[in-house]
Amino acid sequence: MNRGSEILKIRHGAALYTDILSAGMYDAFSAIWELIKNGWDAGVRKNADADYEIRVDVDLVSRHSLSGKLPALIVRDNGEGLTPPSLDLFLSIGAEKAGSASRGIMDQKRIGRIAAFTCLKNVDLGFWILSATSPEGAVRSLHVTPEGLSQGEITSQWVERDDTILRGMPKKGTFTAIILPNPKFDTKRMKALIEDVQWRIPRRVIANELNLFINGQKVDAPLLETELIIEHNKIVGYFDKDVRKKPKGIRICDAETGVVVAQAKDMSDYLPYPMGRAEITGDLFVPGLIKHQRTDRSGLAPNFLRGRTWRGVQLVLHDHFCNALKVLLGDEAFLRSNPISRTLKDVAKQMGTVWGQPDHGIEPPPGLNPIDRSPSGKGGNKKNDDDGKDKKDKKPRPPRLQRFSYGDRTFFLGISRLGDNQTAEMHGGNVVMINSKDPLHDKLKSAPAALRLHLMASIIGAIERKNEDNSNDPEACEQAIQRSLVEFFEKRE
Image 1 (cartoon, rainbow, N blue to C red):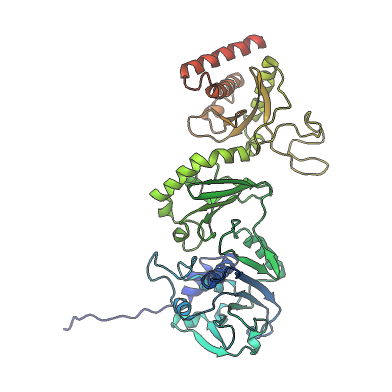
Image 2: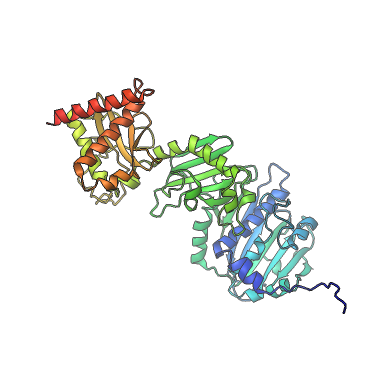
């Protein structure tokens, strides 16, 4: 009996492309963004002229000759087109090996164009690609269908520039256009696409900046009203407070390409506090991330996040970014919901009776707002109710800090999430943040007097540890705390 080897052929089912590599990995908005990024990358490969402007247009048309009487969604770029090297890569589904080099700065897995199937109501019809690689002359037309891909085939033909299927395309120049017949998009959903995509466009200006137009409207990243910029060790961040009803947090971007690779709010376990808080918006640019993005573009690969390189990033963020972000964040999210907030107000008020009323001319560092909200600066507005909104205009009021006195100085008191074993911490010279996660808070809730004493000692301790006379002497600091507590209770009696 002959036991020699034989080669068995593998068959690809059409569902591999319509379900697993498209709908199983992308929603419709993410799929369009993949096509936009492919167009962006085509412009990067072409961009040898400093005056060249990379442009991608996304347009919904009422009908197209390739979709009959049905609407069509067109994603067009002014890049190099499917040149022979680009076409060779296009005909290769997936990279040859993990981490293999590509011709573009964003091309990694080589499956992004398969995402187009997610956008079609009838995937069996497939989609078309029109590509011009020279300023004039014929244009290549490719028809991509699930059945064809399962057979390893794509239909290609050349058409002249006056062909009806090229209506709306540039008469001259290079380009690539993807025609999606009968898409899952209407006028209403196109508006939603704009709102989604603008949060995928990086804010940082890079050499190969994307100019994106959707239905003729220029789409840019949302502006930051008051921008906080931090830079260290080639890591750059642009931050602000997110005042939307549903804040979305910081976007993690690849520094070289500017591409958004992850959302910080989804990475709380891998980022130092408060990077994962949704109340801070902005972009954080870290070098070398694009190659570590997950295949489905939903974030960074878990193995990378557990590795040494990312731990180094975490240390830089912790040491050089996080304190400034805590100041920027303030205590708005905690003061309205934390169970110890009322106790803090009582403590601040009692400290005023012992050490005098605070100076309302003193302000906290930039990024933290004082308790005073009225134009006169003398206190609250009676029209404001407890839910943080003005009853007249329904606008959310700014975050509040409790102003208080200690010794002969004015300080501000707030709540934040600090590190383990920290009860309180000084910020910016005159702001004391109480640790919202201090386990003693819950244990002492049923003992108000003990909780007030604990908070008082924590506040005074944070101040005295920053006192020049006590900063390097724990024993002197402890003695100063005890003297202040005795003074407090003696004057209270």
